[in-house]
Image: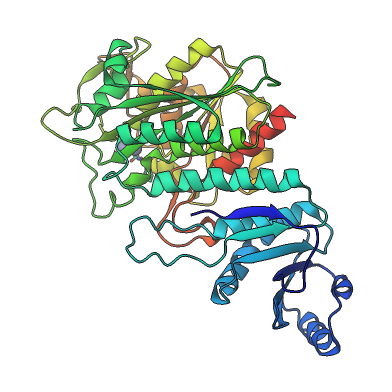
Length: 469
Ligand code: BES
Ligand code: ZN
Ligand code: ZN
């Protein structure tokens, strides 16, 4: 389902309007009649955050905002229900408060609120809203960019919301190929034979219990005018379903949302889609190692020692710590690109989710410049970054008595020891983003919705856009 962002330069008196103000006087140019004006004044005096003027030929939704982007996104979400209740298909957002960033954030929040995943309903009760028009104070480029960001986020949400019954690793790679064609980035997929030839021991071990083959998808966006000489590589955890494997997830419900365990890779795919649609001048490669993780007669077992793509041997002590195994192979694979920097995104640990919940992204790494830039982007798009320590002592917990590493840390600092495991497979400026908390919502969470949130797409888009500028 699409939400179109368009531009409107002249407004008809049948166009439904949303007028954003921070002063009552900003309504003056809209030629309200006497009764309407008196009503607006009354609402303003009562400090209402929003009110509606029904002009019969159209609705005028007035929203009172401060100069704060996240409040604007949330206000848009609050209004979204009203637009649907009035069966409005097209609306024009007028930023009378003269703050382009806030107006755009409002439109972004409105578009993000309009997302639905209806594929599996027989009776598809779709929202009425289809088109959001930007107007004065914005340019065509703003609409195009917002459309790219929304599309990328919706792509990530769709992928996360797809259950394993559709989205096997193989199907995932096919969806990525189709998206590459649609959006303009190139895609190469390694299938099981090639993955075996390359000896990606982490991805192959996790896949042993599966009835479906693994895939390793490589996406590339390389515009002629790229501002970076060395590519930026994004790596995403692509566990299409995580049962825990033989270390089966214990409690009731703990598996219910595990179709979201490819959320990191969905963010990478959504980012590739967004940057190619927006034609960002930056060379980016995206890597997605994908498989499900499940028990079977052939599944990898606690105690197994496996040899990774880079030759490192790993003692597997818990088959539920599978994300780091597939990511490690992709991170080693990334070395051949001589990357400027690498960022991975992963629903990696319950520990990260327990530490900060859904309110932000846990981050750690060896690349201070990228960490600073990600914090700026995180604040811009409100996918905020919580930096965790990355002290070398944490790596001591990963020492094995039988192999180079074990895949399980101690009882404390689980998000960090997981990051330390990954760091072993890097030799470039590296940042790890653990999105286990914000990737998937069991209950609606404002404009982020219910189910897959697409977290990471807006963050990485903003980061890459700033890099390319
Ligand atoms: N996919 C999970 C992490 C997760 C938890 C994602 C909750 C989203 C929501 C991951 O593979 C996992 O099971 N991690 C274990 C690691 C442990 C065995 C070291 C965990 O966090 O319990
Ligand atoms: Zn797991
Ligand atoms: Zn997992």
